[in-house]
Length: 114
Length: 111
Image 1: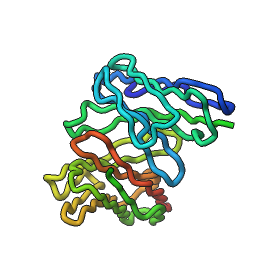
Image 2: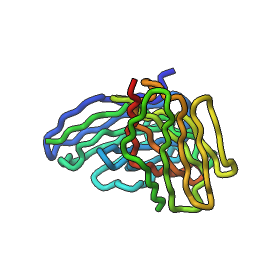
Image 3: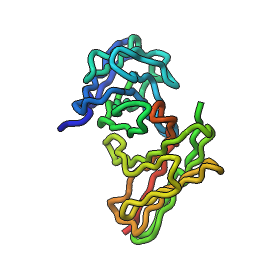
Image 4: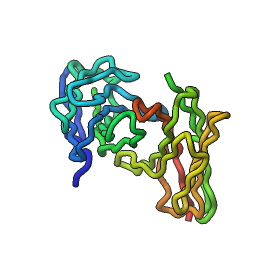
């Protein structure tokens, strides 16, 4: 039982390049989330998907797009990377919103944009 | 939206002592409060959570208290051990929908 799996673990991009961060969960969870973690800022929600087929913006969605490919997979795309997007990105899943169920996190993708 | 504040940002304690981390929240509709532990290079892991119909919850050396009137909740770790050294995050949520996190507390347990 792998839980939440994120790929890649590390990535270096040049300004303007694009990339997609992949996330998959094997817990049959309905809700999935993308967070970014910056020093002194805690975890900030980028986008979330309450259920398959739906996506919603979080606190800091600018510069990102998401796709809920199926129940298991939720990807995050940076179309034109900027240095301000240097961060650690975490994918999380939960059984369902509305049930007070906790988030389960992956181990993160460390992204550097030069 | 919800605003969660967490203090202190760093905390050092001697092994065997207790550690307390405090959080406040702004939205009285928040009703679910999980705590996460993050070790270096890993994602946050849930260690304990509390719902707003409960004032206190304990799990071995870890306890969480909630004061809904004052809108604050705290994590208590007793008999600290070196393996408790990590970054701890509190969070607040309305019905398990969007989660709002504090800025983290880096706990160091000195052997």
